Length: 219
Image 1 (cartoon, helix red, strand yellow):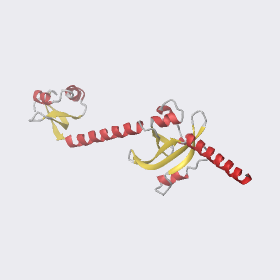
Image 2: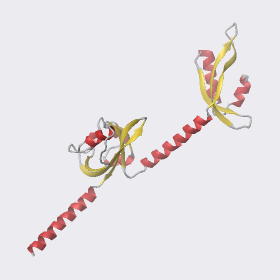
Image 3: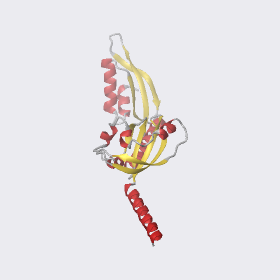
Image 4: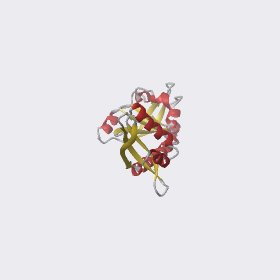
């Protein structure tokens, strides 16, 4: 393509970015390697990767660009589908009423809004700044199962625990933990629910049953 033809084939949203990259290559000798959309003969746009280098005359003036154009439309479609999938997943867990924590070696990697509210923090960023997710757990809670999971050993998925809020108050919680892939490495996904009210009702029921049993014995 000559320069004018090439420019006319560019997608309107990419034109400024591509022409600026060409200008930077010619004026500052920066590498020219860019991905953008290019109009095909049928009028549809396809994603391409363009690599090129200016050809200079004897007076060091650019006379043309030499390089390659590769169709990357399939890769771009895959990336778009992956992004949509990630957005759907993030929307799903962000709107979950269960607290969700993803961590590796007790360093938080992700928290959802429900977890932030459950532990009484002001924001996800504040909770994510914790150096150790152990701060969310009563000291008597064993971390042995976490280590077993990361090492590929069998460990119970469900467990009752005592959580510790930002203000220091404690509450009963039900945890389900399992290994997931996070950025290419194993991490622990912990789903948590506040069951304090359930535990309170269970304790009341047990007291009532004990009183009833005592009444039967003395009656």
